Image (cartoon, rainbow, N blue to C red; front, side):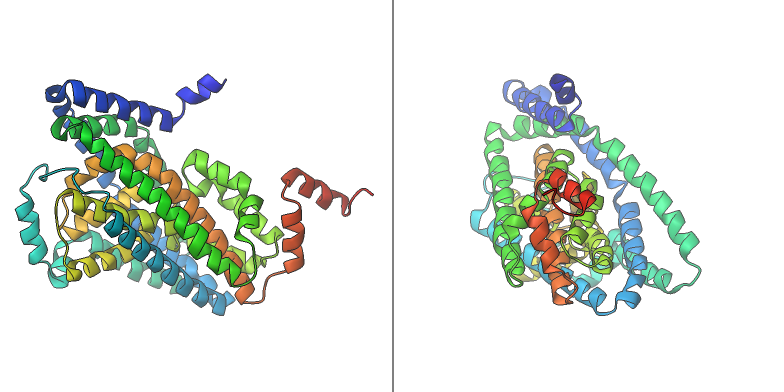
Length: 418
């Protein structure tokens, strides 16, 4: 049974593909280089999802904000909280990437063009040109405007239902495409090792360790301080939602544990209106883990291709990531899609560089999903406390009954047996 589960596990196949690609690249580099179309082909297919996903996610997310009229202050505080914390996550990711420099030494030239071409494009970069030339950002801006209009229409339910239906099938299609990730990972890794040598594995490993360490730092420092401001134990909270965290870890998607998280947040004392608003909104707009990954991945690729970014370019990238990171939902592979859209929009760093990340992206998606998941739980607890819609006695009871089966038994009996 365990063997059957192993062979149906996508992570196992991606790991196998990475190993096979690395071995082929090391022992038969000429053949390995010919595997490049497998990696670039997979990236091209994924890129087809960029604009539809951004439009659907942003439009539906904003149109669902009509709850702000009912909840009032909670909605405004939630949006403000999301922006502050995700911006902090973005900045932390960039700072750590600049200190550790995980991309140094990985490649010496861009796959299809000379680095000088990109440096020239970077020097000539301007926001006006950026807005005129990039379909991705135009879709983002249109999606925001469309979502606002949709939220104000009284007869918008049919439209939102239709968009939700489309979104459902778009993400199903994306999930199906991501099943072919092992093939893309094999092609990307084989080409990378065959072209640049086995030494490229070290910077990739360094990037992965750096990303995990940065997310752990964010959880146990930033989120710990947020919880501590209302005297709530982060560690006890993590123990309380440990089953959901294992589900998210296994699926690499925060979506898998979302319904159960909402139920547990209510059980631990957060009011139903706060949970109902903050968790779904945070699912689209409070993706701390994805934001950290995007910022670190962009800096990693800039370092890998030897592109020194000016302060103006860095601020521009932060601004772009600030927008595109809001278009990622907790579905496996969506972080990679948003990264592709960011690089396409920036036009400073080679989009072809995604081949370097393809092999390890699946493993970093687990860190992204868990950080996103914990971040949204912390946001809900903080906002419930801030609005005085938090029952501390329920929290104490929930934390003392971290065994879920014992908690359910106690609820059914109404009191302890003796």
